[in-house]
Amino acid sequence: MKLWGGRFTKEENALVNDFNASLRFDRRFYRQDIRGSIAHATMLGKQGILTEDECKLICDGLSKILAELDRGTLAFDEEAEDIHSFIEATLTERIGDAGKKLHTGRSRNDQVALDMKLYVRDEIDETMRRITELLKVIHRLMKEHIDTIMPGFTHLQKAQPVTLAHHLGAYMEMFKRDYSRLADVRARMNYCPLGAGALAGTTYDLDREYTAKLLGFDGPTANSMDSVSDRDYVIEYLDACAIVMMHLSRFCEEYIVWNTNEYRFISVDDSYSTGSSIMPQKKNPDIAELIRGKTGRVYGALTSMLTTMKGLPLAYNKDMQEDKELTFDAIDTVKGCLTLFTNMLATTQFHKDTMEKSTAGGFTNATDAADYLVKHGVPFRDAHGIIGQLVLACEEKGCTLDTLPLYDYQTICPAFGEDIYDAISLKTCVAKRNTIGAPGPDALKREIDGDEAFLKSIGAFVEY
Image 1: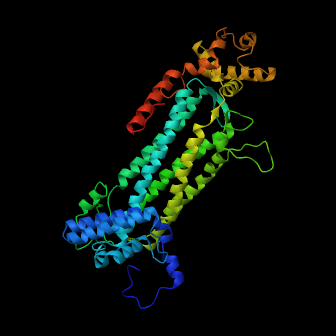
Image 2: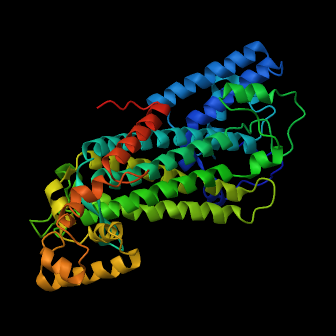
Image 3: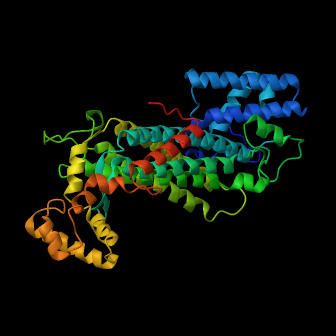
């Protein structure tokens, strides 16, 4: 059954019908559609637009349809144009003429806008939940690795000594911002479009505030044309998802590098690795690679939505049906990637000795050697040049700053004393950096405490 057709004298072309229909993908928000319809019918009953008996008949009928769809005992009618017409036709078939009154004071335009908002809101909540699980794993690893020394990098070259906790803390901040970004999107979108009609409201005495309250919104949308003609909340959500994927992809890139034979910083758990069909020795970080690859898929959904909406005049246009398929795919992708990455990270083995050895071999303490000279009265720019000469000397001798003889130090600059070796030890280099956000133990403990406070503020259980 179609929700329109009275003024048409010809049947819709079969190809047009298939091209126009959306049940194959919008069936996924049948729960939201039924929830919205129950709220709408309840409001119509409250306003006296439906009788008490009609309201009860409709709401009970919709509840039964929902239960059957949840159980899988009611099959979708593949001939239905969309989820809205399927549910209304099924209801009318079961309860008679009362079912035909459900659509009073409502258009498919505000109905689909509501369904999409309810669906996106539910998915934002689920995405935030999965980010919370990732944050909890990162927080646990930070607490475990405050003293695990590793090289920090710039340009993929060893730069300065840090700790694994400090490195992980950078991602902690990124994903905390992702969580907050999603919370912002949720707050901004939480206004109910139902009652906006096709574009110009309705002559029925609807109580839009009541409907909004029933559905958990902060209130009704303020303009009926805007209510049915924009999907900026979908775009904002996809944008937030794209940033989540960008952060996951960066983490995966490092994860892949750390897993190489050249680095050996980590070992990926067997349950999150795959092998080669020809090379029996291989153990590949395919999950990390797939997450990195799927990032482009989510970017594509965002770009598609921006392109779809960019030239649409007010109010509703059928182009907006394209808000669903790629959005659904992006949502599924982000949720799957978050869960897989969280579990992969939680089961990863970190090789502390290898990390520390790598740090010692890359002149990562050169900046601290320069700072040593500055504290002994040498201008920083001169100190910078002196340490550069010392690094060159080490490369020629095949040693490190830690093992270079004091004689060589003093030949280049007499300001060096025996205490240079303690000043440039990796533990000293890390331990003395305790400004806010630094890798020193005191600074890290403050950072971890702040992360724990954040997790508690969003209702996360953080005891390990």
